[in-house]
Length: 392
Image 1 (cartoon, rainbow, N blue to C red):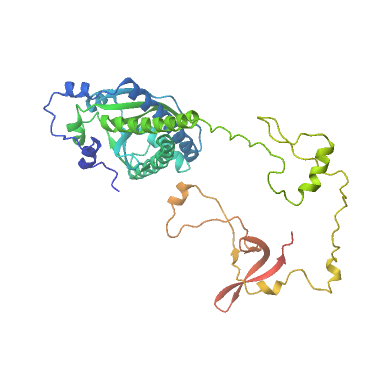
Image 2: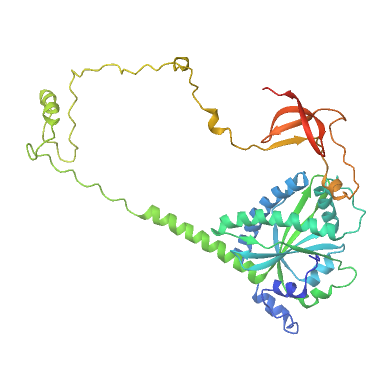
């Protein structure tokens, strides 16, 4: 990945629009494509829920508190964005491949990207002197991939359909130097701008923006509205469906049918109590009372012999598992390194472990610590002489 947006990707961001039609009246086209108030509010709510989930994911990646405020929805063009954006920024290109068909862009300040990527690599977020390069772009793409992946999960629950994205790509844009060539044809194209205030610990207090093509924003709203209406219709159908009336109980006629064998025994107490055999209309017949002279006895259980009385036979036969293979691992030592230190590894790098020279090494069986031993050499191979068995 070269980290740059191609002209085809930029053109595709317009949802298939012809980027060579810049001579048309942009004002009339833009006014016709504005979202309604309902569409704008719904898009803001969708973005708010999605980015709330994404903030939690970013917080885990940078090991810092991340707060993203309620968004504001407005409209912008690339020319207006170039006038407001005085510092270099990073455009992150996101394409939806499942559930939704369309693309949008995330815009972050260059400094914010450096802070986030430095924290991801194990730094303290203050290493900002290095020039923004391929490593930064790759790292921020990975962060956005995980963030927007979790946001897609939230969106899936809102539209009742799976949503997935392609791996994002990123490029650095400096409007102060010259209007980027790849954006010149988009100068008067109107986008829906969803802006959030983003705070990362005490290091970032800035703004993150999402740019939606009008048609894609409207498509998101339609899928959201369709899922909501389907849910409401299903709920109304459940509440409005009349419950079936209970079937009337048939009147019990005396001696109308042969009774089970137990019936004569149960009928006698019923007659002695003076209960009517013919139930009243609308009432269920009463059941007969059980006889009062039932003989109840405690349950009897068989006595089992203890294990020692079984003639010395063990309850389990360990011979059945003697041939089961187990993985034996010898651990020389361990250490912890940050991502930044690991990226600095090269042939010849020496890694210091937490074991002293001559100290016993650990023997693990299927990952369980079972023994200690010392390293020996058997002909041309290493071996372990067990010196201590670990008993729990």
